Image 1 (cartoon, rainbow over the protein chains, first blue to last red):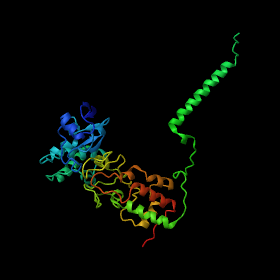
Image 2 (cartoon, chains in turn brown, cyan; image 1 turned 90 degrees about the horizontal axis):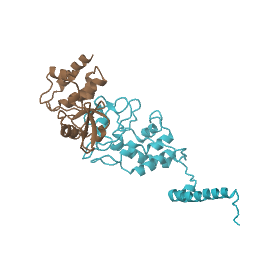
Image 3 (cartoon, rainbow over the protein chains, first blue to last red; image 1 turned 180 degrees about the horizontal axis):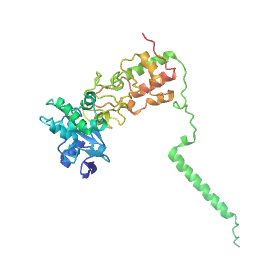
Image 4 (tube, chains in turn brown, yellow; image 1 turned 30 degrees about the vertical axis):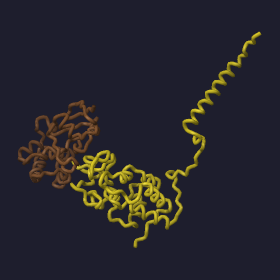
Length: 151
Length: 217
């Protein structure tokens, strides 16, 4: 048994604490917004927030999340109205969309720690999130748009 | 006639009890700690006041071994000359270009511990783990990459470049968690050229023989 706080809700789960957090989220809790990409922390599709940090859930054991706050793309905002989510829609960022939950979760940590990021800051924060469709330019624009709303 | 027990007999009884208990307790003590418990071992605790006996030949020879470890990918990869760590046995620039950050723990959504877990992730070439995973901080980068033996030896002995370490702390650093992690690098990574025990011995030998910097060739 393992107890986890996910998107402000406590879940008591019949799962091995060694299970990667990604599979707890997807298979045990049914939150499938977080995606499996590479499974070895190389692509960023599985990024969730663990006490506010953009951890890669595919390599993060559930045990590491115990006693901490997990936030997934489903819990990023109350009504899908996080400035990033709005900017993403506004600029039609996604193409296939598979990596986008991870992109937004990484960008959210960037904006939390840096309200007005430069191009270099965006590069530094987002270089670990790969997009096979090549939506990088729109991702950059959307982060800037969301930052403006934050300011 | 039964003599009335003298008053102080009661004290004798009590004394005897104390004596018996003391003897029994000492048996327990010896069983638990052995005879060593009585021996005052006069170690020369290497970490309390290291004795330096200058010997330039032994010192330089020991540093050669130390250098072979510090310049191995397991150590050097996190002591890069730039602000991005190195990766792999060929010490290429770390994929996805994570930056050092002020404290050496990364920046924004790219912090070391986002991928590097408290323990090694199972599988070939997966992120190795340690609870303290980080680079040296931005205000003291402690660069190994590109340093000659002479440069690195001098740098290691300079508290302004070695993380404010005196001799005692330098010696203790051989058993630092991240140093030890070099010998538990996860699947698919070569180990440093000598064992940790050999490294520690060479490290302490170098330091306690005067920490001589090998001459530039």
